[in-house]
Length: 208
Image (cartoon, rainbow, N blue to C red):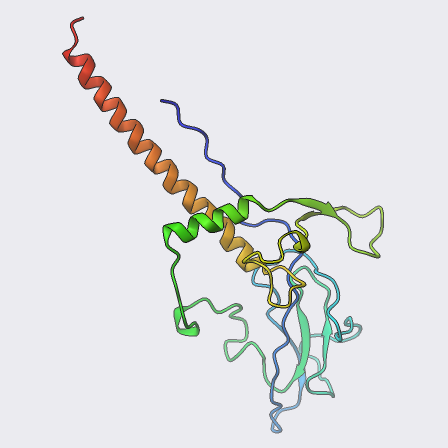
């Protein structure tokens, strides 16, 4: 019995990254506000385009003084990071633990069953891939590879705003696909071993 080669998806798909979320910060009157960088995307997947109401950064620099607490600008980087004018770091006391993945920072934790993993795998394998350029991009620029959210608006990796991709969620979908196919491959190997053992036993009883 010959086993098929497993089809492994890359952990990170090249997609339009989700927009960075602003964090509201209550200014501390005892501290002068400065520009702080937000966490941006959990996994950098490329600039997702401008966010409504957030201008592009010009002369703003992380750590420099600013005069309007609550103001923000878009760094337009591959992680969709923004600068926020605040009196304390919006990322918390750690100042760089982005995102927080420890259990203490989460509630309603639910581990997927094998049936749920299979459903995620099917959703992942059903994603139609495409290449594109953003509106206004240089026609000679390199085309991006990913998928169009309109094709799969209910995808588990769709951001809540319905306009962006949750890259962290998309990576988790790829992991679910790999885990499911690894389990299927393990079952096939066990089946192959059992068949080979039966065949060996039969050949042992047969006259030569």
